[in-house]
Image (tube, rainbow, N blue to C red; front, side, top):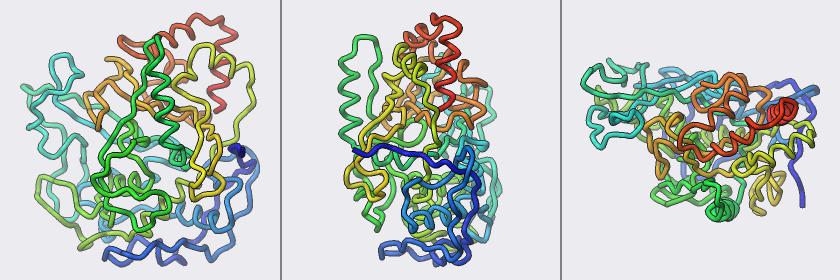
Length: 425
């Protein structure tokens, strides 16, 4: 059985995207029906870098996959303009604004919800938020107002922040077998310590992708969510199309409609669908091909990680599909440190928002990937250190309370060893 591997190099140089007609943001506005073309860079693909790398292609990627990675990376960082279809409402102008160099943030979005007196339970009456739960403060293309929290003292509106998560190693996550996620959920259901992760079964919201190599989901299918802070998205192309539409107002063949806005606008300064299916897929394939940074071999820390039961939810490895289209990720044990399940994290971390089967208190176990490149932790960056994040797992009603207590009880030296291990992932 193959195992995951890591690059040893550092320095990211992107291939010139201008040479890739399928990658430009001003490609034909009509929806494509033919399968997308895998782009081939006209410039030489950079050699493997040196040092401590991140945001780099899979170590065993083919030459064609490396070319796709660099082309997608260029598009991922490309700021989009009014002429590209930005708006009418938006929160960011590029994918990289929320996932700079593939890691967490710095961009974020705000969520809002009308809650009951307890401050975390959503009210059945959300009529005060007719345009949804996402704050869209910026506008263009003829719009005159954004979507912001209502100013009404009689309403109990909870506003929370979500920082853009890392995208490192997410191809490994997509490749994990559905049956593996189901297996872990079944095993946790038999536990007696309160750790009972649940699958978020979600309705697939995008149109069908003509590239069926990665999946054959169609709009309306019930699928297993694995991406997003509450596991509301099943695949990386759906994640990309959702972010283009929801964060930038950029429509695509997968998400062809502008979201509702106060001005009732149904289009922007670029009539019709804004980007091609190739443009969506090359961004998605960049994410699929992004490597997990090389990890230190801290054996003692791994044993402590298991001793305090962190590994119950942050499962060190899960098996991937043998038929996954990226050969380097097919049929391996992906070292992702997540179970991709929802867990009740208690009232202190609750945000009032439900996504699919995820409630206000539920969060998907985040993959522990590239933590040494991250400066803040938890979904809203409220934790400045890994230790603070662990302690905040122990609030009232949290499934992780017992594990947090075990961590607190460790001698100081063992705590340091465990924190060094987690920080090396």
